[in-house]
Image 1 (cartoon, rainbow, N blue to C red):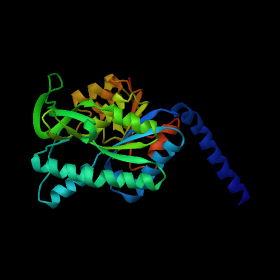
Image 2: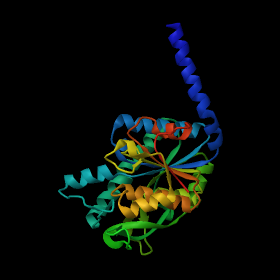
Image 3: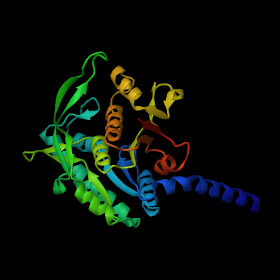
Image 4: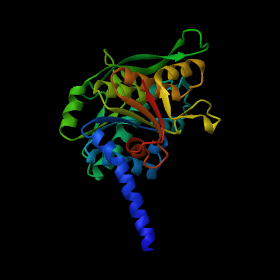
Length: 301
């Protein structure tokens, strides 16, 4: 028993020592986490994510959370008899769908995340993109690639927006005072229109505006595959040029398109690296950040 205890203590010490240089590197840096997928609807996974973010904060990292809510929006829409449809991974959003999305994102999910963070001793503050003009937006047209050798078609999908500007003043004030911003991905147009915005794109723009060290996207797959039916084709490091190729030729499709585009956009705006990781894996955030091997796909320049 004593030998077993010493072995466990040795393993624990090794893990902590492996994490130490990463903790030192990230100290004082901003990391934007897009929180989404099943990690938002499974109670045990919710707590693991909150623990990871709390640890990040307590070792001197400045996390900023941008959350999605796709599964819950779909559930609420189904409850009122409305089916969801998607184009290139983006939800087609009429006026009624936009109202439901705002209710779910801002009224339910955002407040729950803030409460869970505060219970862990992390001073979290909930924000909608509409607060203090945090997220200025304009209509977004979905891009459909019918032919990899031709320009994509653009399709109007309703009250879906894209970020035109981020008001970083409020975020920097909160970060400077040791608060963790928790952002619901809603934006306001020039004429006061409310837009539902894909949380991956919002996280990318927030990360770029804050010149974050990292953008980390939690999702429901391990990362990116060359062939999603072949588990041996997992890609741990994906160069930006290859990622763009994969979108055009259809290797990357559906809901993975916004995630890859978000990673590329964030790096174009100064973010050092971007990561796509499996939010269903307990403690995937700290495993990706604080270990040499990581657990997901790292998108690099």
